[in-house]
Figure 1 (cartoon, rainbow, N blue to C red):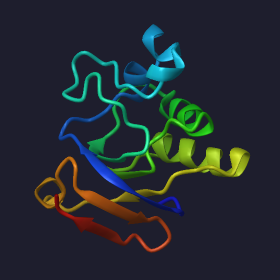
Figure 2 (tube, rainbow, N blue to C red; figure 1 turned 120 degrees about the vertical axis):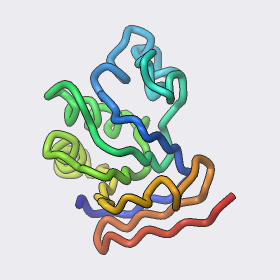
Figure 3 (cartoon, one colour; figure 1 turned 60 degrees about the vertical axis):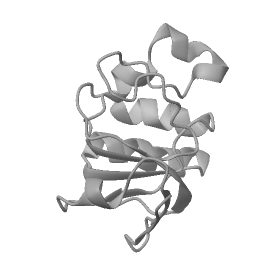
Figure 4 (cartoon, helix red, strand yellow; figure 1 turned 90 degrees about the vertical axis):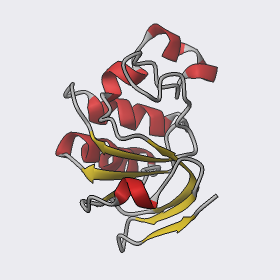
Length: 140
């Protein structure tokens, strides 16, 4: 877990996310499109993650995951919280470094239970407390 508090509309996917493939395309250089998921193989292709509570199973791919997340955080384009079934050290490092370097991290809470995707749907209002691990959900 990474501390902090975030609340917003959930953006949910059952597909793992490759942060490098998703947020390091030429289109992501445009400020208005920086937070758009640009991996054509992903079901969230074209969706903007800024301000959302991103709910997903895991990260895959590059060792740059943490740096990409840290960059999104430093630019104010990141999700307000990450709720993930398997939080790996690369993902968590980006949130931790952003908190240490920019005083702007986002909470990361690992929720390993299989019912995650039954409890939270895209659009639900979700609050994430990274200090306690508490998750609040208000269905839409």
